[in-house]
Length: 241
Ligand code: C5P
Image (cartoon, rainbow, N blue to C red; front, side, top):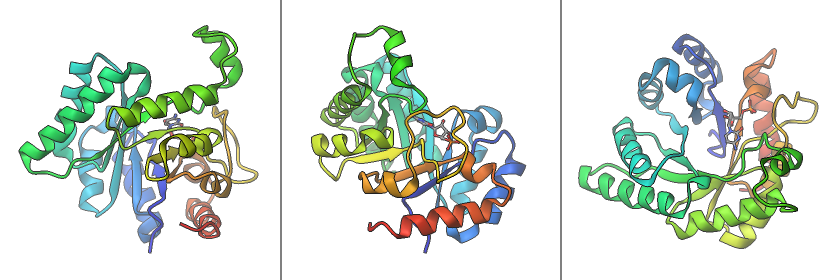
C-alpha cells in the first residue's frame, strides 16, 4: 500500500518523462504534484493521464489574482478532476473566501467531488534575510507570518496550507490537527538543498505534524529514483500516521 502522505513533484516538461518516472515508481507512489512547468508545457493532459492511472493529483498552480479571477480560474480547473488545488494566501482573505465559496458551489452544481483547496503561506525558498528584504514589516519572523496566513486561510474556509516544515508545529497549534499542512522543502539526509531554504528531513517534517510531504528533486534527480523514493517511504514508515 502506497503512503498517501508522499506527493512526488513532477517538475518535467514532457509527458515522456512523466510516464517514465510514474511507471518506474509504480504502486509505491499514489500521489503526484503537477506544477507550473508541466502544466504550462503539456496542459490538461498531465492531470487527465495521471487520473487515468488511478493516481491522486495536487495541481499546484498557486493562483494569485483578484478574487473573481482566482475563483473563476479554479472553477475552470474543476473538470480535470484534480484532488487538490491551491492559491497564494498573500492574495488576501476575500480572495481566499471567494475562491473557496465559488469552488464548493460549482462542484455541487456539477455534481463532482470538490478538490481540497489549500493556500501557499510563505514560499519554502524564502529565507528570513530575503523576507526582510521585501520590506513588508521590520523584525517580523517568517514563522509568525505563516501562522497568520494559515489562520486566515482556515477562516476563509480552506482545507489547509502549504508551508515549510519549520512552521508546521505552530500551524497545528493555531489551526488544529485536521487542518492540512503540505510541506515542500523536504530533503533526506545528505541530499542537495537546491534553491530551497527552510528545509527538513521527511521524518522531521512528519514529526512536526505535516499531513503531506512534497518531494521533487531528491527523487527525480537521484541516480536511482526508485531507491530514493523507497528510502523516503521507509523513513516515513517510522513515523506514525
Ligand atoms: O525539488 P523540490 O523537492 O524542491 O520540489 C518542491 C516542489 O514544491 C516544487 O515543485 C515547488 O514548486 C513546490 N513548492 C515549494 N514551496 C512552496 C510551494 C510549492 O517548493 N511553498
